[in-house]
Image 1 (cartoon, rainbow, N blue to C red):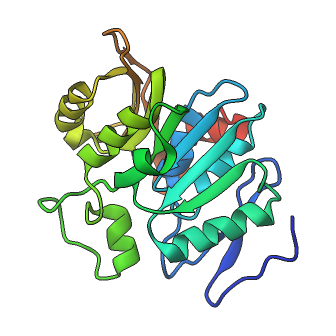
Image 2 (spheres, helix red, strand yellow; image 1 turned 120 degrees about the vertical axis):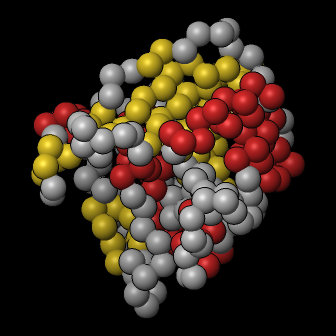
Length: 249
């Protein structure tokens, strides 16, 4: 760990428990959640690939993915300057400057910033809610992360289709109640759903997350993977989840 990285007021360093990597976060602003961690496990990558994380927040996804074997390179795009600054310092904290680059900017302009058909994969944990879904958090950084204030679902999917190479994958975590809309927009931009996994808080509850892989100009066929159950009882994780965290698979 690079001890020369400075923390700002309210920040802390959290252990990611992956390859000795850490992340800088501010609990009063926004901390990454389980959705980002589960997405990092769901993502399939080759070796020596170039990956774009759209809306990286504090940089958790590229850092978790960089902990895997393989010399992959990551571009990470973030519109909130404070989050981008934390992400940049986390990259330095882990001495990953040669593999991860943080860019300030809107994901609505990803194809203008990076070019068209240049990435082997896109990963994203976008805002889940639009104007019709729930109350916005009065704290703007949290509201931007959770609601479609600065981008829409269509922006995310459109820009993914523009920056991906043909036959390459978009990996996304979202909410199941928006699946019909997600599939409709994926189809509009020639992204074919290929893998899907539902995440359930408890065995007897409805799923509250869905992990998706869609391939640009892929053939029509989707595989639904076994469900992932998070809790056995309140506060007690299932063996399934603990095994996933332990093995990283």
